[in-house]
Length: 295
Image 1 (cartoon, helix red, strand yellow):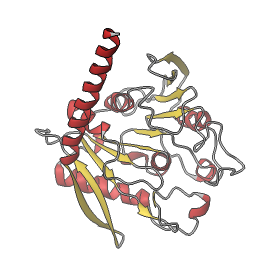
Image 2: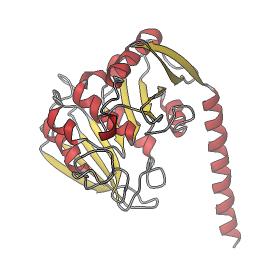
Image 3: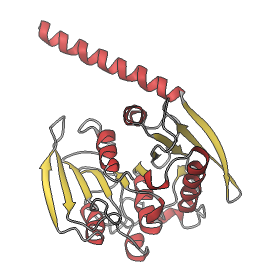
Image 4: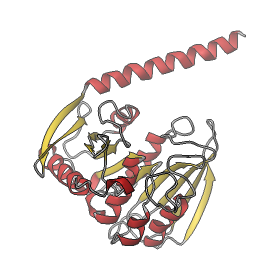
């Protein structure tokens, strides 16, 4: 009994310590405004103390109907620990009044906001203003933000050094029509029981987002583009649900003399539509993947 109470106490103190740290980092995350294509856009920027001038920059995109302020505070501690800045852009409102990224959902046909250009514009602005390196600027996001990662990779692959969609999907129109000009390092984290972004895809638009392909196929597109030759499968140390890591390796170099392009799929068995923090240290996994491509 005493041992059980001790474990509970340690867990409580650990959570309390994390919350205090997260709150401190959030207070250091400042709101900014920028004008793009005649529209006032906002973003939140976190720059850890004593960050070197040419430090990496990670963009984190919220989901449909979400907001940038206060989103994924866990990434802030990862940023402080490893020495990179974090930008949380705010999606614009669509016809339903929901904050979003324009990825061509079936109900976004009349929505004209160009978020691909906005993210490129914002990245260049921050690189110039703060000295962040273009070669070390990365993109991650969940759900609608994950879809935006796939769309950016397909349309503007050079805008970011690597991509990490979380619970994201690839729309069928994007799969068939986007140029997919260049191979990129990409990792996806996805639960097999995700009912919002279905693991098996939704080619009949039963979910209302529009038709989209399965998660393994979406990831496979990028593995094929990178000319990966084989797949290595391992399991992460279990926290709650089993996490199976599929590493598509043997790809072409990310740049001349650089590391090979790797494409990963973290399969959370029976996982739902979440960032995956109960099953794995998602923020650390994302950064560990991104850091392979630092220049």
